[in-house]
Length: 78
Image (cartoon, rainbow, N blue to C red; front, top):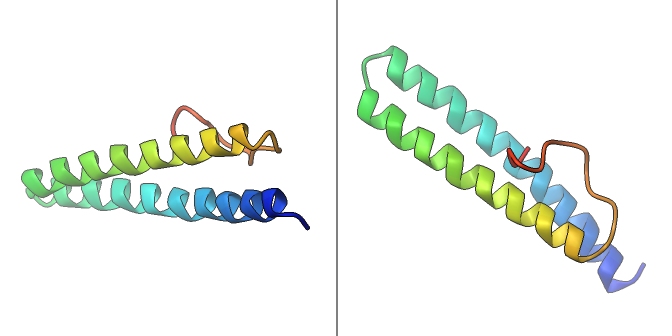
């Protein structure tokens, strides 16, 4: 396995790990808003968007490596 293949594997794992974070931020944002904690919910929504952007950037990195991308919606970072 060369360095490019190794990096591809690591970044794919990062994409999958980040997807879990995005889902958790959304879940807890809904929880906060449901429990009248709108300020915290809004901030968690912002964190979710930032984490989704991280996913998009990681996928761009995979594309740059010219190797297969993991399945998912590149525009949503998942």
